[in-house]
Image 1 (tube, rainbow, N blue to C red):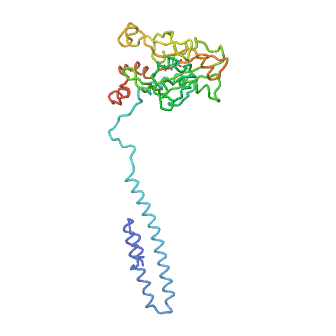
Image 2: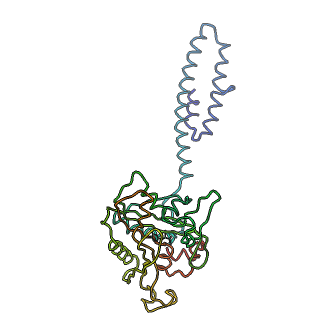
Image 3: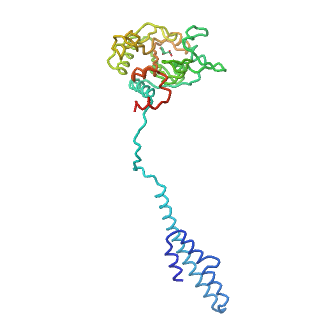
Length: 332
Ligand code: DAH
């Protein structure tokens, strides 16, 4: 029996332990052989013989179970070492990714307005006629609908042509009450494709609403000038009278050309100015559509791709969406 204990103790793998188990406890194993000897033991000695044998068997079983546990843990550890990943191992690949220039520009715009306590709102990309057009003072057959080449869906909904419907959704939200200070960054869609247009692009909408008389054009002018200086540095800013159905008065905002400093070049079409956004005082009809009374406000809309193109001197807007790594790698 001594050597049987030795057999178990000397096993150093689960395989050799299993071999020991078969040899000791197996059908034709040592213990089975010992029990078989019972037959030839004298009757009066049978009890003591069996008792002794069972004690030995219990000891060996106990020893075997303990040894098995130890070897299983050892095997598990070895497996973890073998399959483990060395996170400190350097594989020679040291390139990191970067944000897409459109996202990076968007983040910069968002940072500015969030620092002034504007909230960030969202709306659906598939819009209904009411939110995308009608509530924004663009009645059916209004010629201004032609300004935006719309993707119409079969059920009368549209892919939103601008982020302005989020103005409407925010004002109609029962949990929202003026004063409102919001922006909505997001993608918009138009049937357009040339050097300055892609069918999907991004805008950041802005809306500020407060009690009647509290918001004036000078607030709009101040914030947009400050914003454009933050984005483009030391540029001149000018407001040009314009028309948007949802604002009255409306203004398009230009900056002095950042490439020729205003002397006139190919990018600013020799004018010295670059048009960068649309804005205005919220039209009373828009407030009427959402049931607001005795309020005033301003709104603006920024084209993110346009900003990214100007900031990074990207000549063709479409290249932003070609997924060409040679373009993207320049922004790492
Ligand atoms: N929604 C306009 C567009 O897509 C941009 C715009 C202009 C938004 C003036 C405004 C605004 O909020 O006041 O062309």
